Amino acid sequence: MPRPRMLDLLGRGPEDVVVDATGRIITGLEDGRILRVSPDGSGVEVLAHTGGHPLGVEVDRDGTVVICDCRRGLLRLDPGNGSLVDLVSAGDVVGDLPLGLCNNSAIGGDGTIYFSDSSSRFTQPWWKADLFEHSGTGRLLRRDPNGRCEVLAGGLQFANGVALAPDETFVLVAETGAYRITRVWLSGPSAGRTDVFADNLPGFPDNLSTGTDGLLWIAIGSPRSPVLDHLLPRPPILRRALWALPPRLQPDPVDTAWVMAMTFGGELVHDLQDRIPGFFMVTGVREHCGTVYLGSLHGRAVAALELSPASSTTP
Image 1 (cartoon, rainbow, N blue to C red):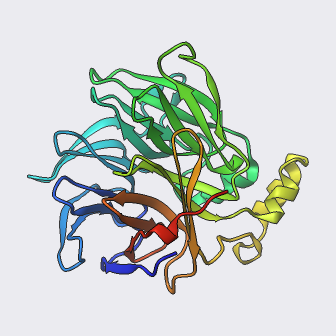
Image 2: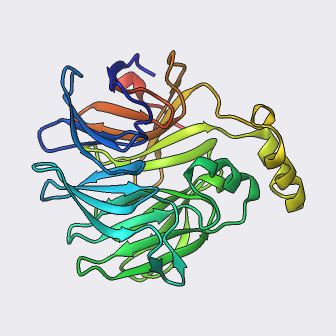
């Protein structure tokens, strides 16, 4: 991995990153602030405060920002005046369940928002509990421009990152707890069908995004856990026992920064991994005109690395 520049934020937890039409980076912090950062990191401004904990961020075609806030739900921010509008509130019933842990989204050309509800069992601070329990209560949801919401897929293992195919024939959702990316077909002969886009990934997939290079970028939060791999096929009581252990005895993310990129046909193009002092557990990734911006649930900066031909790998 090329050595990154670090864009300091004076705050913790830029879980996701997006780039607006002027090339500025937008991210949210765990204290609820939504920030806009100049590409060189020299300017950081506060656009709004959600009063919750923002995770996924996306810029819509009109310049507004769609925010997945794990405490408030799905929001829309006007960066011009800082106003926030609730699109789907936490606790609103979609299908037959309330919206629980709103995590990441992708926006269609007509304004349709596809977004993930990671778990109906656990809130964000207890995300590891959902991975340990492995009960599969995550969902992929869709909000039409008229405000109608529906469930596209359920039974997902901690539904996380969301991305649309460039032609919008399918939508992808990362299943962090299953090491895979699931595909839901939206049009064509397979419309309504769900299948696996990428399976048996080498780590926990987190947020997804489509770069200006046309590739699917995947944040890998951590390499696979041998302990979880051993316990997942075994009786649930063993996984509950793991969650009951003191935090210092539970598996933790490995101290590494890792992102991958694939074509939407499933071919691996980039596999970038390195140790960056003070920066690990990459949860958000966004490629913009040759620069890859990384967010981290535990970081205090956005990392920016410049791609080069040597960055590419083949399987």
